[in-house]
Image (tube, rainbow, N blue to C red; front, side, top):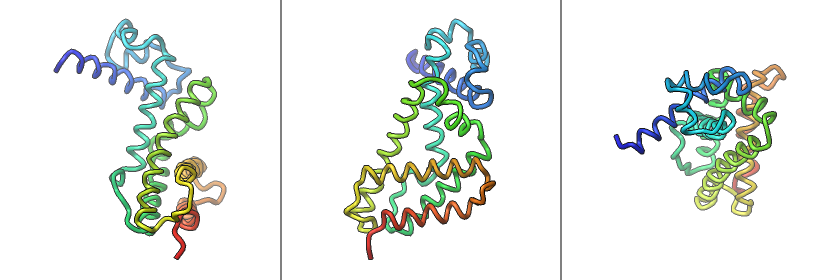
Amino acid sequence: MSRADRLEQRRATLVSAAYSLVMTRGFRTIGVDDIARAAGVSHGTFYNYFDNKRDILDAVIDHCFDHIRIVLLGPDADDSPDSLQAFCARYARVIDRCYTLVAEEPGVVNFLLLEASSIDDRVIERCLHNARSYAGEAVKQVDQGMSRGFLDPTIDTDIAGEVLLSVLVSALFSATRAGADGLTQDRVRTQLTGFLASALGAQA
């Protein structure tokens, strides 16, 4: 392994350790010593990569969104639906994975929905930047659906990308409430995929 690879690996280890601590304990309750200890490195080594605890947070947020993308898209990440039914079925699976994420890793969603926005404006902008990246990927899916004839060719693809992002956010919010407001997982899945079909589907 080259020196550059070792440096990158150590940085990744620090980010992973910080991510785990932030998701389980919250950003404000941890310090640089906690991160270094969890990563198995010295206090001084931390400062070879980051200026302070706040400096590593941007990398933690990026890591968090990468993780969410992997969990929510799962094996469907590279799928290319060829019909409106397959398109909606894909998002039905994504919606179900939102519920799994909240059940298995509540700290991830709690951090993004509750804590992150209260830290500073940089955090909000970082989260929005990552969200826009997902919306950009969604636009490509819409373009493919339009080219294959099952999505409405007259829709604004940028707005459609935002709609697909909003579906995920809605599912995550509903999952955190765990059906306490009468919105069960089945109901949320059915209504959101039905909305996608009517809002984006090509007219018969």
